[in-house]
Length: 364
Image (tube, rainbow, N blue to C red; front, side, top):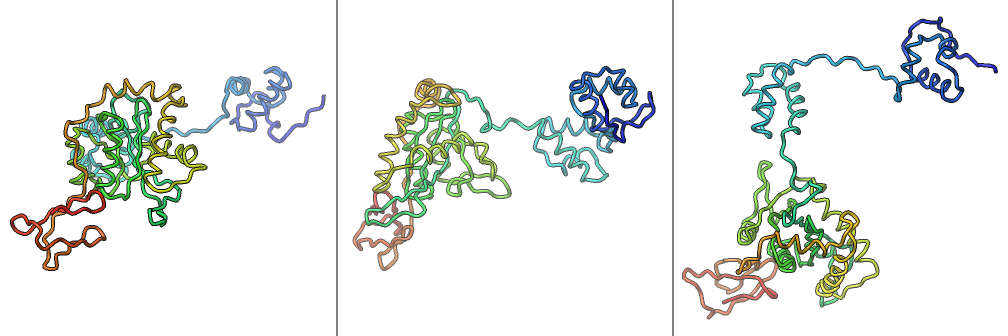
């Protein structure tokens, strides 16, 4: 048998040397593929016996790691941990003030960024396991389909569909609504809750402008949404901006709707869409869910039993606008102008209430 000796084989026998990845791979090849003994490999390669033994025992290639030097922040790390334990979202600048930090703020921020996730509470929308009745995730889905009006005009882009998914049972509900305004979204949300027959203890929502406003990074529910959830007694979890993964359950089902519900269907209008969608949801909720390994309908009764009951008086989701009637007896609601009979009844002060419901009907 003839061996081809590379440059790395020129060392003196018994001499210890730094082992490279190439040397490590060759030693293992000589042992496993060629069946050579440790003594023969030492004689052939000129490496120390312990080096060869270490290469054969190691399942990973050698990696040089320099010992990590200490940081000036290490001395105050216990104090940082103590503050983060009590106040996990305390800014690094405030921590610096509390511990009397006078050195570079950059290295302190790096340490705080490293330690903060340990003390942050778990994200309620990022759980993989849900308790019965715990929460439902809500989202707006814009189906890539043509939805014609009664006049034949086609909605482009399509109107939004309010989609809700129960976390525990994966039971799905949904309804197409005319616009992304608060009264339409909340009306669709209410119809979905009525279809469920109960109210989950919490709802997970993203930063839809009609429902949530942000000022200085703080999320604030709009007044219509506050009234809506207050009458239901429902808690609300608002996700951070650009964080769709936190409601990945409903996001994945939106993709499922586009591949399993839409293909091959045509719609005569929003009502026809909602009719077909409702019929399809009955079948969808009876399919075997790939994650649960059971049908959502089989879990739904347990899920529903742990939810809150619908209130006797449901929230009012109609658009309400109070305005002063001009001398020409015309008022504008949205993008439409309406005339009011001059002899219509007025409340004191000349203000009229105009709820939107059923085609812009004006109540005199």
